[in-house]
Image 1 (tube, rainbow, N blue to C red):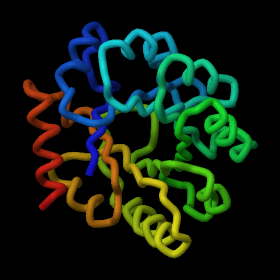
Image 2 (cartoon, rainbow, N blue to C red; image 1 turned 45 degrees about the horizontal axis):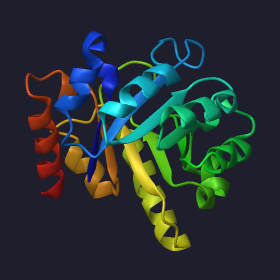
Image 3 (cartoon, one colour; image 1 turned 90 degrees about the vertical axis):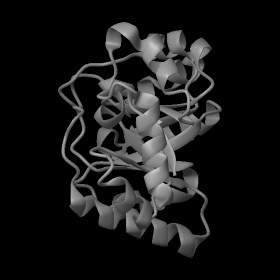
Amino acid sequence: MKIAPSILSADFAELKTEVKRVENAPYLHIDIMDGQFVDNLTFGPNVVKALRPHSSQVFDCHLMVINPEKYIKAFAQAGADIIGVHIEATAHIHRVLSQIKQAGVKAEVVINPGTPVAAIKEVLPLVDQVLVMTVDPGFGGQAFLSETVSKVKELAQLRLQAGLQFEIEVDGGVNADTIKTVTAAGADVAVAGSFVFGSDDPAKQVALLKELAQG
């Protein structure tokens, strides 16, 4: 299990320092929100560009924005390693995922709690990662939605049956109580925000989640 601390829960005034505190995590999850697809506003490509020289982690940029095709090039140039786009945010998901790949970045498709796996089945051969939202997107600190676990299991089964290589990521409500559940369901990457950055020792929390996932 790869742990991806979400800087949505970090101290925005000390982002460089906060990122350094979770260097033991292989991924860094960066939530991009436009105030339209979700109510919140967060980071743009300039923040990704500013953080890039200070971290060797995989920058997992989750675009919660309407018409994400407008922003692919900017985030790729800023230093994103993975760009995730919501199927609910664009009418042209295949085209957007292709644009991400063409930009030299790994492509991720994201589904909200109310969206079935069937909605993304046709693009699974194209993606490097699938993100299953285990809370409604927009804000950190929400409770894990247990009904989303079945989608992780379904994706793991589809991956096996089709011989595909995409990783499965979960985002929302990941903590010491839920990490084992998502691991058992077949998740490969777990995003954790408030559980990590709400602690005095974020690195310790990252290590704890990894340990619990390993059983």
